[in-house]
Structures are given as C-alpha cells and as structure tokens.
Image 1 (cartoon, rainbow, N blue to C red):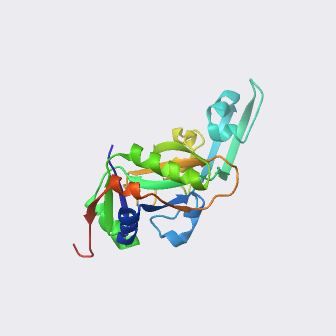
Image 2: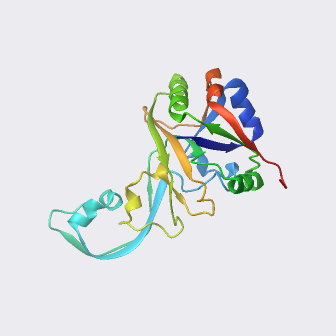
Image 3: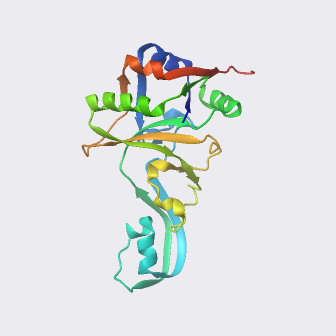
Amino acid sequence: MELFKYLKSEHFDALSNKGSIRIGTLKNYQSLEHGTMVSDSMEGSKRFTGIYDNVTADQIKGSSALSSLISIGEGGGIGTLKMNNVVIIEPNYFVFSLSNGYSKSDHDTWLEQESYDACYKLATPNHFFRKVTKQINKIQPVKFLGLFEVHYYDEKNGMDFFDPKNSYPAFMLKDYDGFSTQKEIRAVWEPIEKEEIEPIFIKDIKLRSYVNLHAKVQVGT
C-alpha cells in the first residue's frame, strides 16, 4: 500500500535531509493554530444526539456509546430515551496523518488553505512506521496500533447512538467539514504510561530512504 503526505517544503526537507518528523496528538490537533484543514475542536471525542422509544437492554448493550453511559438489568428497558449533545471524550493518542492516494485537486486545496506545496510518497509504510515507533519509544513508551482509515460524520448535529460508526474509536472519526474527500489514513500509537502526552519530534536518518518527493505545486499552476 502506497501512502502520501501533503506538507510544506521545509518539513519535507527536514525529513529528506535529516530524517526528522513531528508526531502529533489528538488533543493537540484541537488547536486552531494548525489551520482549518488540520485542526478539529472535537478530535479525541464523539458527539451523540437522538430520541429513542422502547429501548431494550440488548439494544443498549449493542451500542458501544450507550453501554458506556447506561446500564440496566437483563430484560429491562427504557420507555423514551432522549440524548442531546452528549460528548464522550476518549483517551489521547499519538497520531500521524497521511492520504490513501494523491489528488492534484486536493493538493491545490492544501496549498491554498495551509501552504502545503509538497507531497511525498511512502512506498513501504510498515517499514517506515516500524522505524518511527522505535524512535518514539526512545522518548516515551508506546504501542503502535496500526494504520486506520478515517470515517466522517456530522459532528455539529451529532451521531446516532445506533450508527455503526459509533463502534469506531474517536481517532478514526472526523467531521464532514468540506475536506472529507482527502482519504485520510492515520498511524496511531497508544501511550503505555497513562499520563498527559504532547507532540514530539523524532529523528532517524534512515527514515529518509523510505520517502520520495511525489509532487510540488505553486499558486496558479
């Protein structure tokens, strides 16, 4: 599987020359400092809204979101259940975002919105992230959870409690914000020690051998 990363030329140069990259966190990407295409105030959390009649215990157990909020005995039920703007906050993770394919149109949007004029191709992601994981563990103990496809939902109005997407962890969910065509893939690491985490920079000169410049764009091209 080939993956692609849109970014600024200066950051590609840091990777291709020094093997240096930044690994972010879900919580950090809530900040607006990252720009409209990167930041999301709901990163690491899920919003739910809905009104349900005659909800059974089995239905509650079948919804990972509802079962985390409500517990009733076997054979029990709820006549009317109303949930409005319920937000479930999940643990923080280290994340690194890429795209499952290259699009000139998407790249033009990245350039316009975030000044991302470069894009590199990652031909062997598994080997690359094995190296990255080794370097992260030199700074903070983590477990690499793998590569995950991002799914989208209406974050403003909230997800239905019985939507199949509610079984996904929050790091796999984002808002339909106009950028949902990006085919985002996320590499995710779980911190072993349950403490607050911050973005980190790692450096391994061997990382540069896994990336190749795929495209550069300029305004008006």
